[in-house]
Length: 187
Image (cartoon, rainbow, N blue to C red; front, top):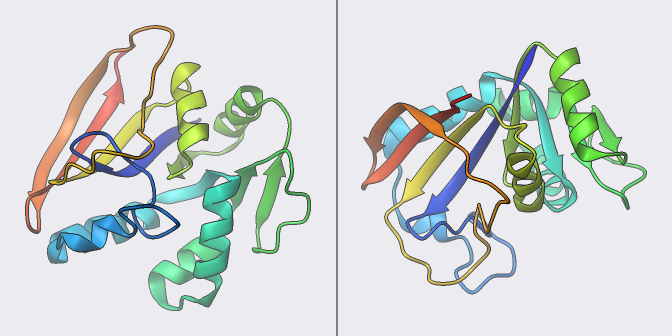
């Protein structure tokens, strides 16, 4: 059975919007803090450990514009692995190995977990992640927390209808004070 792993760049105040670009007051905010060699290696190893990506349409558009032009180990991984994009408007994805999921997102995600063995990573995709957390489908959260307070922007978790408990399974610091924490859903 697959495991849904949410992976996010996040600020101290919980903002996950536009870490690498997009139209935002603090555009590309992750580039303002050096994550060092260990932080870079963590992101590469994390991506190489994925069996598939599950992403929302906005994240898909951002990734599909960038990754097909990237060579090397990481580019090969992202371009070759299966990608599932949740969208009610995208019908003809241009990025290879992409399947559009346009039905019930929770049912579709549950079906993916049953079909795919290994990690199904969900990077970015704020609305999708919020829906998956709300419906208790996420198995693991990996947060790369930057020592920044942005003060504005979309947050990872705006609100949920109930409390959920998570267990810290790993924590370390890389680069200029970026913490990488991993939490598993405590059931």
